[in-house]
Each structure stands twice: as structure tokens, then as C-alpha cells.
Image: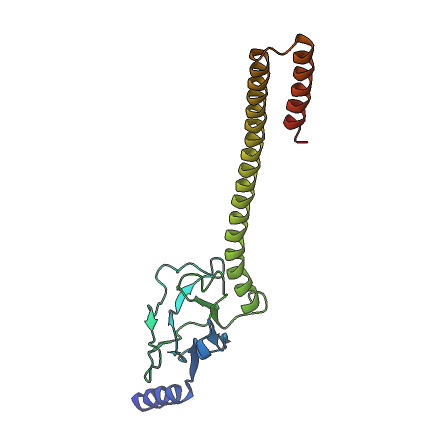
Length: 209
């Protein structure tokens, strides 16, 4: 019996496959390949070749949020012109459901769609998982656009206040002109004509003519 158990273990070890995934190849923000189909006992090995990425387990429902108790490579920084590269791997022990991963570097998941899948299915595909990750970033952009609209409205209100100030200043200056003419002995008829002209001028300025 022991002999057969040893043989079975050896067969299983020989049958196990190692999948190599390149992280950040050609300085990209991506895993290559983006998904693999593996069986129990297979090893998923990640080679980090640029920048500073992670392989962090998440869920299909929350693609850019670390799953409680999930596996995580931690940040693996790679220096420019490096000749040796970090490697991190895990052995697949359960194939009953797909596994989902993302890069926890700021913006890499939500804005760049840097996600990875093990054994995706037709109903829960890699494409659907990546689209959900990118939708997280799209929701943030919408919020920023709303803020920009509010700022524009504030600017318009300020412009309106400025027009009122210009009209008031013009009226004060016109009144001073009439007062100066009266002090210099101008006739009532001349003063009335001047008042009429000043009134037309003030109305024109107030209307923005």
C-alpha cells in the first residue's frame, strides 16, 4: 500500500504544471498572460520585471479590494536596469471556483485594469472582471466632473456681482459731474439737460451697452 501511495504522489508531482506570469513586461501595467486555466497542484509563478506591483487576491464582486484572508505577494519593486527580478508563486489547492487578483498599486486596478484570473468561466469571464475593475475608476471620474460644474456656476455668479459694481460706480461719477457744473453757475436749463444725458449714460452702463 505504501508503495502505491508513493507512486501516486510521484505521478501527481510530475503531472503538476507551472504557469509563469510576467508582471509589468515592457514597462506595461499588466499581467501576461491575463488568465490561466490550472488544476489542483499546479503552481502559478509571477515574475516582476518592472515598476512596483503586487498580486493581491480579490473577489469578482469587488475587483479592486483585497479579499480578507486572500493571498498577497506584497509590493515587489524592480529597480531601473535591474538584472535580477523578484519571483512569487502559490500552489493551486482548490479548483471549485475561479480566483481573482489585482495590482494594489494606486490606480493600476481601477484606472488601468491591471487584473488577473485563474480558471475564469463563461458566466464570470476575465473580460467581465476587468470591466468591473475599470468601472470603479469611471465612477470616480464622474464625481470630479460634477465638482467642475459647481465651480463654473460660482464663477458666473461672481461675474454678475462685478457688473453691478461697475454700474454703481458710473452713477456716483455722474452725480459728481452734475454737482460740479451747478457749482460753476450753470443755468437750470443746462443742468436739466446734463441730468438727462447723465441718466441715459447710467442706464446704458447698467445694461452693459
